[in-house]
Length: 188
Image 1: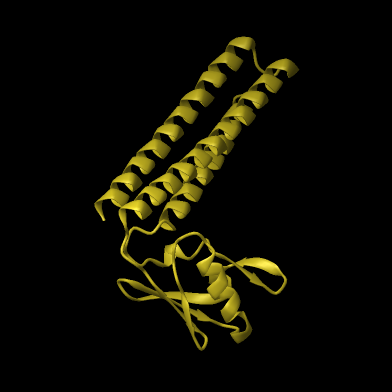
Image 2 (image 1 turned 60 degrees about the horizontal axis):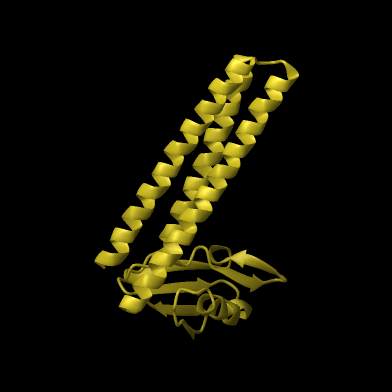
């Protein structure tokens, strides 16, 4: 019985870690004035009849601090890459030069900083929703174990408290990450 509950806790922890990792990737995609390959990694390109992540159609590089380049592997996808970058909502204006797409990183305006902060809050809220969904699954599983008679009511209450503590710690980590990103956005 303890093995089931420990496995449950490990599974919940793994899934909540996944929500934190997704949040970190999304935050990396929010530009703060400096060129970073992480900025373009979430961009999806319409290629070969489906949506592919940009890193699957070209190589992203940082030749200078305010410029990104994408070396597109298939010449027929250059226009799709340009369109995907332009339409991704990051306020970038790419230019094609053969199979190389140059993406200058403009200075952040006050208005753009506000938009980035709002996007960061949306990403953080999405991560919180994911963590709460994992919490709900954990609570449902402990209740199911109690109904089956595998654990007692007291054990079910104890494990429900453990799941809540775990959830609270992950929500706190998300809030800390958001505060850090907000500070980064405002400082640049």
